[in-house]
Length: 407
Image (cartoon, rainbow, N blue to C red; front, side):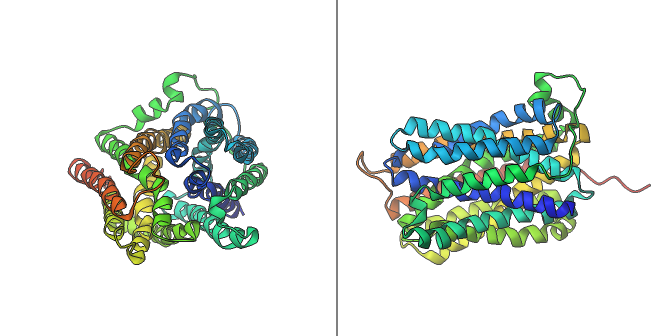
């Protein structure tokens, strides 16, 4: 029963994110904000940077995890439903997205720490629960393109309906969260300090050379990751793909398969090889996009999207498990929050700003609203090269801990 509830939680958690995150750039482009599409992918990581402070101060110390999760989702849902009313005021539009993300991003760490609290084997059980999050993202994309579109008689990605869909789902998850198993604050009664709130106590407790290398590589890899989330939806539109959200779910379908294979692959490959395969998949994905762009070769684009399975699972889910195994129960929430800060926070923030400015430089003039296919080809080689450099750095620097021999 507990695993079922945790699976439903993960499904809704990522359904919410998938419904708006993969469509917002298309929506903004169709409402006169084509040069501002990187701002949702900037306010999102700003919220991720704030999240560990919230987790360390509130969730780990004073209130039950499930109650904080519920309140944040209810509040965030109402904010998100208000966002489309302000398309004529881009500043207000973006500030409301920031307010929403300040509610949502802490819930990533909360959901992970809640799930880890109620399972016994991270490697064997967590992937089987987390996979429902991937399924939720898939269902969101298919729902938007294949259900909402025909219902409203329009291309749903260009309308406000994905935002409304996410908002309604967020309220539903908020209500459901209050039925989740009780998860008391693990840090109750501990001294409050800026170091602990920021996750630095957890960083100091679990930190060693391999961990520092992992954290550095995670931050750097999230710079090209921001390019994918922001600009793949626009690239698909330029390549003539009509059902953009549904097409992007190919990546999550692949992610589902690889998530189910992760327990076996952990045993055979270990942490370092899993992480390296994830980074190599990012290099290959962007190279495929670059090769496909001039002729809008759909099968190459689809193959690049399908690589999202190893891209995400082998690096990010492996990283979550790696951090949890190095943590103690008292700092589990802080450690997961710190990982969110580094990856979805600092890394994605840097990546969104760099990618947005590079994209705007590629636009051929002040009146241009989109890149040509030839421009897309040059654009995609940049994150491919960056991801390759991160892979080389990690391969040369990371040394996995040896298992302690049995007595």
